[in-house]
Length: 535
Image (tube, rainbow, N blue to C red):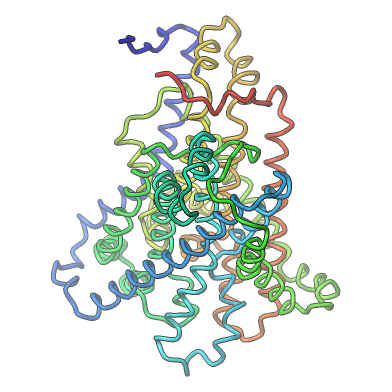
């Protein structure tokens, strides 16, 4: 039996890297973990709550409704996204065409759920006249179509990670395609599907924007009402403990699936031999699904924005809200750069953080957004930190505090595919620290950091629940402007146009990050990144 390989001994060349990593984790602790710890401390010091406050029948009904909403939406998203992923990866086509279709399907993630309320609300007509059951079903449809592309991303990556030999053996087994799907594909992609489903459940369960816009009572809406009524973040956090417990369990489940071996394929050209042999007729079903969550919402937004008059009305919209669009783009850019830098610094050197820390990194997602905004107000509204509190810096901090776990785990999933020998050789190199950083570490990490930037930007660009409380006067982000217009106006032309402008800005920034990762000097991978590493 071979003895396990040992990590290379500590050398002076490692000292700058370890110091940078320690500084990165300290900054993560302050930006990401401090708001949650502050809420727990506020709850312990508050005297405005009683244990019996959580035992009311109305609160239990709202809690069960939110659970049912999250479960139904996750099931619908898994059905749509998983089916689309199987069709996309199993129909015979060129890899370039498959990549283009994959990007088209993932474009639906750029439309946050409350953007799609503007599209679907036309079908509801008079909201107050509709029963809660009808509005509940529409909420399920909105969440299912909004997050189906997220399931597709996880499921598709899991399918492309299936070894070619298993695909060939399954094809030669003589079993029907449905038996192959049930006995071969599903067990192999269970980690990917489970991680995506747990993340969707968490995001839907804590979402208050869609229920509020549909006039649907839900537990996250009640949490915001409780905080606005008392102004006590500690009492509101106690009120939200059941939601935090459920969301924390979903976050822990997502982390467990990630730890079971899930990893993103760093390249869209990863070779994959599908055990299912689907004809090209199945691609029509994929086009129908993509039409539901991408083409139809975008076309409807363009129609509501004026259709042919959109380009002539664009000048008026930019005159009224151009400043909000500019500030939102700058805030998103600063937040994604900070999150990606922190993710990259804390992942170097290759030694992974302990299991408890990797699990803990998921739990900031379990804090309800409004309470996170309240905690940031209490933390940064003091003389030393007022430069952050009084400007757009508080919005940057809110985005990083909420979605840094997504950036870190996305980058880590790609970073795990880098051969360990590359990093050991770099650690033993006599080159200066900055030379190793620019010529070895950054080129190797570029695909993962680009993925982390795209994943973070998709969620942060539509961040609303923390910004609704933390946004300072004069720095109103576009999501908050769109939400206010959807909530108080019946004319949807302006919010629809803002949705399209915001979508174009996010697409442009994602494209810039992907292009930067491709053209980075010496950034080409050798193809060995898919080999299992030797521990």
